[in-house]
Every structure is written in C-alpha cells, then in structure tokens.
Length: 248
Image 1 (cartoon, rainbow, N blue to C red):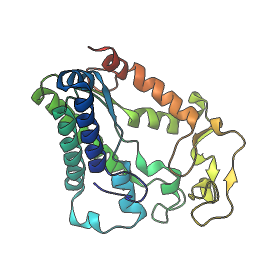
Image 2 (image 1 turned 180 degrees about the vertical axis):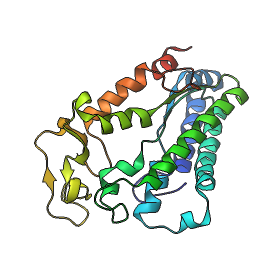
Image 3 (image 1 turned 30 degrees about the vertical axis):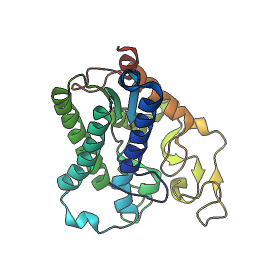
C-alpha cells in the first residue's frame, strides 16, 4: 500500500530503485558476477505498520470498503509482488520482521477512540492478521521459489513481553514515551516540531521502551536486533538472520 507518501518511500518505489541498482551492477560487473553478488546478499523487509496505522490516524474511509482480511490481503499481495521481483533479479536470502501489537503504541493509546489510555484492540487485530498471513505466504513461497531462504523474526512476541514485563528487560515502564507531550507523552511533538512548541523529555531514554509516540528507544532496538540475529521464533522459518549471512 502507498501510505504516508510525503514521509516515507513507497514500497513500489523502493522496488524500482532495486531494479536500477541491479541493472547498474550487471553493467559494471557483468551478468554472472552481478548475479552471484545479488544471490549472496541478504535483504531485509520490515514493513506494514504504516498501512494499518495511517487508516486510524487519518480516520480514512478506506477500511470501510474492505473486510479486515481483505485489506490485509492487499498489503500481503503488494509485498509478495516485490519479493518475487527481488527473487527474479537474483535475491535468494531475505529477512522479515512481523508487526508489533500496534494498538499499544503511546500515540494510539491517547486517541479518543481508545478511552483513558487503553489499547486499540482493533488495530492490534490487524497486526495479528498480517502476521498470520505473512507467515503462511512465506512458507508457500519457500516451496514455490527454488533456492529461496527466509528468516521471519517474531517481533510481535518479543515486543509484547517487554510491554507486559518491562522491569524484566531493564525498562521502568512499558506504556509512556520518553519524548513528547500530553498523557503518556503520546502526542507526536518531540523536538518541537509538527506545530507544537513545547514538549517533555525524560532524563534517561534507556529507561524507556518507547522514544516517542510510535518509535522505540535505541536500547530497545538493540535488544530486538540481538534477538533477531540469534534466534528463530516461528515454526515456519528455518533460518535466523545469522544463518542467512552464513549460508552460501
């Protein structure tokens, strides 16, 4: 899907950039060497959050035209098209990150529709449906595409563990952001941008799971990166990210 067009590069545009890079490599290195380079490379997909978040943040009417499963199918379908394009141009080893429980982000908790800082379960249900569909689709592609190897990191589970047990992982709390304003510092005002002149900043960002309304702190991402590199969290995925880098 093409969401937040002014803030992020759409997936299809990124696919066109990859096509240009692969063509450039073939021109510079020759077809055989370029093919070997592209097949040894590891690609990483961590997308989907904006496709669901934007529909709630902008109060879009798009979701009224689809059932939850139909909308998720559109997102997974677009992703599948790009995966096949990467494969067509030589990509064989791809890492994927599934979606966290999106309804628990500070910027979502403060929406009027949630009520008193509670979670938006409908949004988290989209993430769950997305994760299930992604897992099934990757398993299917592994059987269809010769030599295709993938790692699927279960970000959702690791994220939920830190939300529910923040102290266990070195965080003082799992709800509020370090930087922002309003309840839970959930207003997206960090840095004094987006029309807000004032904002609050915590004393130590590493004590927090969330940096701002929608993004995590560096210390949180470091934990997740370590987990993603070392471990396998889904029954369908045969490889960790480390395995992909070590595989010939």
